[in-house]
Amino acid sequence: MKCIINGKVVLKDSLAENLAVVFDDKIQKIAELKDINTADYEIIDAKGKFVCPGLVDMHIHGYLGADVSDGDAHGIKKMAEGIIKNGVTAWCPTTMTVSKKEIEDAFDAVREVKNSTEYYGARILGVNSEGPFINPSKKGAQAEEHILRPDADFILANKDIVKLFTVAPEVDGALDAIEKVAKDGSVLVSMGHTNATFEEANKGIEKGVKHTTHLFNAMTALSHRNPGVVGAALSEENVSVELIADTFHIDKGLFGLIAKIKEDKLCLITDCIRAGGMVDGDYTLGGQPVHKEGIKCLMPDGTIAGSVLELNKAVANILENTDLEVFEAVNCASLNPAKALGEDKEIGSIEVGKRADFMIADEKFNAQMTILGGEIRYKGE
Image (tube, rainbow, N blue to C red; front, side, top):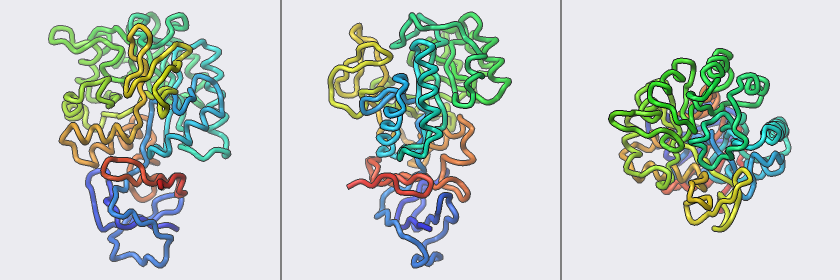
């Protein structure tokens, strides 16, 4: 067994020093260092750095030139091996509004990788199907010609691999689809890419919406007379929200307010596309051209097209721009998404009995080491 010592251990409700974390594939013991015989274990010295639970990215389309919607198992493996260097140990490969055939091919590719033992990267929890059941008026960077009427049967036929999906609650057939999927209970229903009114969003919530796709982006805004989808998502305590905390999609001045309102329902995501981890230049998203310049990814008409954010950087941005404690910021990228996905009994926090998934990070939340299921999968120089 292994034992992490000399770290600032990020627990779900505190930051603790002088602790030892003992593990094999699962966490076996958390105790005062003085009470541990270190000679009994393979020691990992954290050297004063943060010892965090592995991060959970529930919404990521691409990275390092690969895109989930390519339907290419090799590319998905490449993404998994890339994001583990950012401290991500669990993720939801995310499709978008491409043709139904391409979506099905992507599902099959994710199945192949998820069931394989031949890759070394972050563990796949299941697909995040963002689209094609969205409102054309809020399509963002999604291709309008591939938008379809909401189809619960399609989602449920793929519930072995689909973990969550996005739907615009106001479009024809949406409420019935939401209700049917929610009653099945195996797939999280998220509202997004939606032009719903406050009342329409709340009808969706009544039928079973429990999550919100990239809050503020591609949805009706919060206004004092028309609260919109943002108002519904913020005011409903049982609905979790995604936040792209790159300081471009959402002004950093709002980070703290959203965190105070949503608390453990705030889930940091990347919404990263294939340009993530790559040099500035021209790329594609769902077959459409995108130009990356710094933290911005834009289509030729100026439409924002995903991000190049890395999840550990999102945690750093939250810490820098709010008064959240370290453990609260880390929860937003670990425990909170794990809860939203129903995976928190296994992952999301450093607790005895949970999977031994860790990120050891420096003060700027650069990953120095990532441990997956008790095995060191990344070690920085």
